Image (cartoon, rainbow, N blue to C red):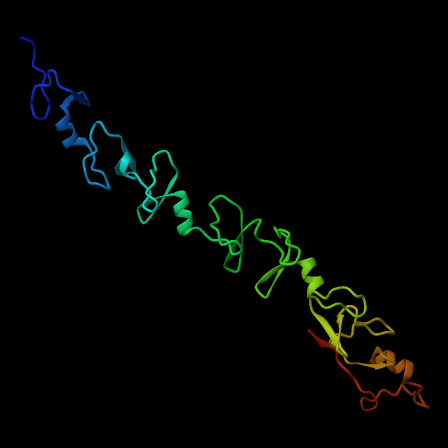
Length: 242
């Protein structure tokens, strides 16, 4: 008689039976599944030898149980993500958890370019100037009344224009007689010294610093010929900054 060929675990004969070798030891199908097969995360049944065992982070699924928790589509050969140990296809994950575009309200998919500003997000092509509708990209922009404007459009639509040079005032200026000036344009008509924040006076609609006004218009002392510039004789003014 030939030598017996039995299951290592249950000692039943394997002649004429299917069996599996593991570490050079033979097991009948039943014993192998009881000893070594994994239970499916979804149905909790054994993943038998004839089934495909899909694993992820020490968890196991039948291929037919490896589904997106949201849309129930198979994740076999499909990209997926996890949230709180739940499996989701990338589309469902993005719809559920990825940032939404502030303009079109659609999901900003991972890997695509997005713009962020003050807690809001945009697709790159949705982050546009409210006036010219062109993408802003990395250019300077201004937020006004919940709308974004590229700098040229903002200046054209909203910025005050200096009464002297006619160019937009984008940073601090001076208001004099209800007219806006760049502080570098608001100067003494005589010596060209900036008058922003300084006391000055005017004559014939021209602004003068104290020294120039006194030299040009103040009466001179009959004895020393120095201009008489007493504070009580001149009405000093100050331009308002904004």
